[in-house]
Length: 235
Image (cartoon, rainbow, N blue to C red; front, side, top):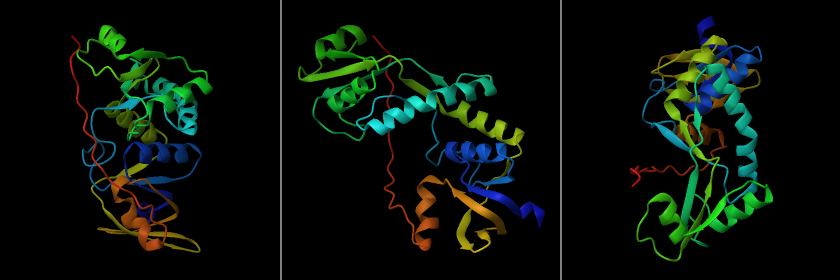
């Protein structure tokens, strides 16, 4: 059946899956996105309202990648005719030398220095004066990087979906993929409502990725966690 075949199938309709699908379609290939739930759902890595946008990382390769993607974000905003990345500044502080899931302060500052990205290094007292905090531990330090900010997740998903459809991307929602079966001629994709066929498959389904890749001997060993964000009004 023609509707069950595409040059490329994308498993997962989050930000990564939609961006990949759009890029493939712009290169002249037929693309179909298979989404387990619905576009914009709250059960995966693209859930929530916003994500931190930052240049500072303890690893230089990630900082360089962030700088390289900024022009692409601006291009996407121009095509979507709406802002997606809001540069409101990024303030990082804590105990210097302590590694966290987000990186380590001194290492991140060293990366910014190497890339000649400006920032302000601040003591606990300076952080209190500039940003309204009170009674910070005196061993806390950090920096403010003016180019950081937040990504509007909902707007980004809507933009990628709309621009993808405009480029010819087809989206099938509420369809779980159970297995991938590659062979010499392509890939058979087993789903709850029958099989799909493609020359190749892009797997972009977040926490569900290893369930599809592990049986093929190429699992990623993903560790899934939930990150909580808190928002406070400035004094």
